[in-house]
Image (cartoon, rainbow, N blue to C red; front, side):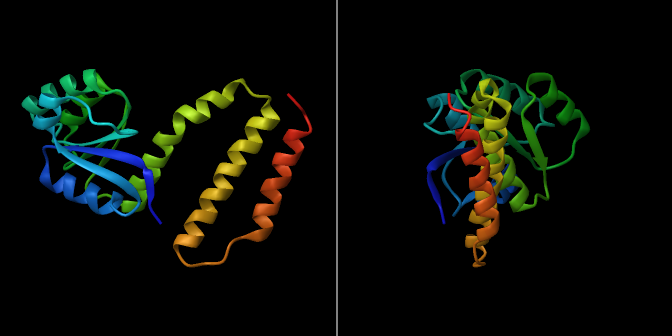
Length: 176
């Protein structure tokens, strides 16, 4: 099942990191690949999140990434081709975005992307009554498990869904 409204821009200058990210994301999200140079020349693409597949150890690349971060309008995740401690240190100096280093677990990258996509919505829940916020968080977890089970061809966890719905009913009883 594909989340076609979840358009992910995969911005790259590292072919190996790009290949790994594309293999993990294609089929799960609408993916728009774009070379880092093209991204810098044409500006951001319409996307909900930007996944940068770059070699953070290269000084030229880190300067380009810095420029790219200034024009990005959405959240960012990095996929790095190697665990270069100098590159990671440089990356940390310009952003606190999540990053993964090759070899990556495709499920882990998808989970990081989903978490990043959900972050703005979940931030908006902070103003809610704690019981309502908890009900929403439990519902997200429950339905994510349902999605994963359907995707794996397994039956839905009906009892878990019922429990999840009870949390929503309890929260609704609180009113506004």
